[in-house]
Amino acid sequence: MPVAVKQLPLSRFPLAFSLDDGNAMMPERLLSSLHQVKVRVRVSHDGLATPQAGDWFGESALQTFSGNGQVSVQIDKQVP
Image 1 (cartoon, rainbow, N blue to C red):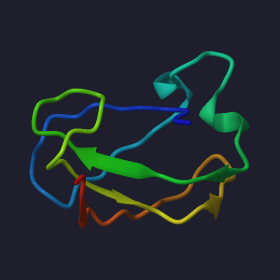
Image 2 (spheres, rainbow, N blue to C red; image 1 turned 90 degrees about the vertical axis):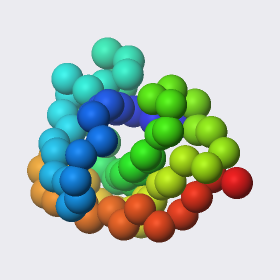
Image 3 (cartoon, rainbow, N blue to C red; image 1 turned 180 degrees about the vertical axis):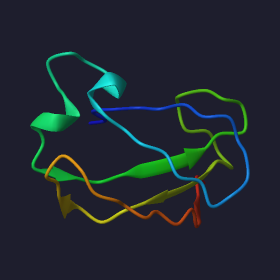
Image 4 (cartoon, helix red, strand yellow; image 1 turned 60 degrees about the vertical axis):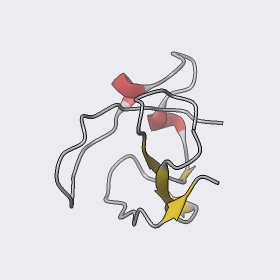
């Protein structure tokens, strides 16, 4: 289940951005409380939160999280 979300306008790649507790979807589930994370990035054609056929996405492997650090995600898959 997603814990944090950030909507950005499509620009050029590569793109760097930060996520923190301010991006939490629910105040009782904060990013800072996690010990592992998987980051998923999706490029939406229509800007909607629900994945649509044709949207491109990529995701990281599940990794240990200590509250900071970098995660690299390659957008190389397409929603069928």
